[in-house]
Image 1 (cartoon, one colour):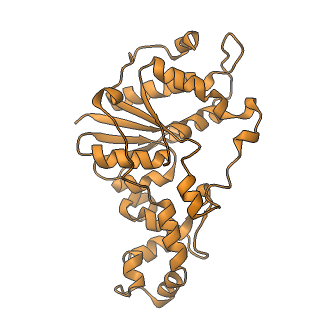
Image 2 (cartoon, helix red, strand yellow):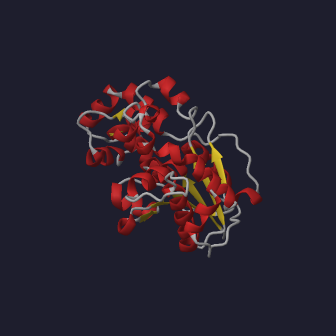
Length: 277
């Protein structure tokens, strides 16, 4: 079965911008390290996973609108990069990243009205019967999508990890299909979503070992009363958290085989891209 790599574009942008310590200067003086980093990283991914399908997905200014309307504090712990000086702002390098993807004939989508996560989830739903899918991101939200056809690759240098159903259960003591409720219980500090006070990862896994949150609330499990009361007491918060954490899987999108087929020569030298920017 062919492999399709789905790349979380902003996640890669930030990792490259803050992870590459040295600037790479274009002849006009601007820093293009993220453009070169994208070219190098995508080339390595294609080679490492022997893939021939690739798509990069980016957020846009409209991406978080619906979730912010539901919960105004959603992702409000993030830096407002509209107030950050250009030399410290990853988004100043995004135009060159887009140009690099165009030059390499790599397909990409800028999410509109939904988050890139939602687009990735929707693409997985439609394409997982056609391709073996590898999502590339360090964002733990994607763990909810993992199954026998969908894996998540977390690139962290020597500590890089491929998450499969088995690895998720070993690491978190819950199955991928329990991740949404697991994170609803413990919260998600990255997205500024508070969990239930007194419930950490071990306690959350223990609670979910008795059944789903709905089953627990309905009283159809044998969960100890102290946990039952805790869940019932915070039912509204858990419902809100689930709505924020669960990815939308019905985003309208248009893709064809040509738009996800890799068009670049895997033997190209990433630094050579600078001359074309």
